[in-house]
Image (cartoon, rainbow, N blue to C red; front, side):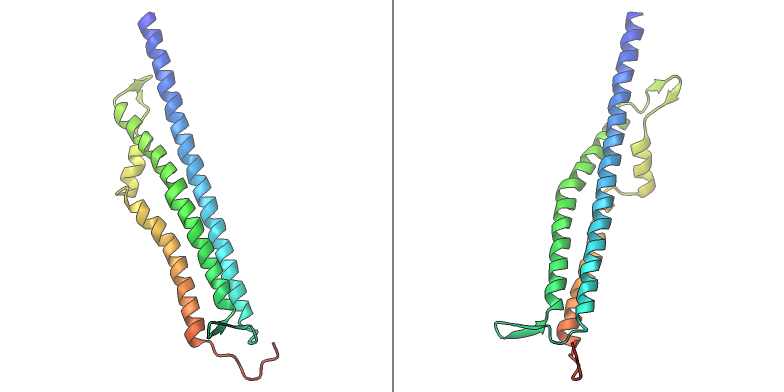
Length: 172
């Protein structure tokens, strides 16, 4: 009974850690998705405010001899906010998620042949890894997610700086 009891306790501890690792992965994933959707929604709202401000021709600013519409500053604020969220996401929370995922791989590798009641219980992280392909592609996806919004903001700024002309009959 002593050996079997020890094996049962060991199995319980392994399963408890595995469960904690999976919950941690889910927690960081959920935090990242909420942060990303909220950030992009806010940045899009800021870009919309900039577009709305373009109807007011008198919102031109002159700084050190350069004149431009105030919408350029509004968009720049949105881009700055996007960069700030990206830094927090990619260099902090994303790294925490990667750590939790790596721990899941470690558990999968260590106990891949362990049977519990005749069934293999581990391998979820490895199966997800197989399904999504190379794990380092996730970095590409995060950069692309933020990069597309950033690039569109830059295009917006360039369009305003070089393509926006105030109307002569403006009442704004």
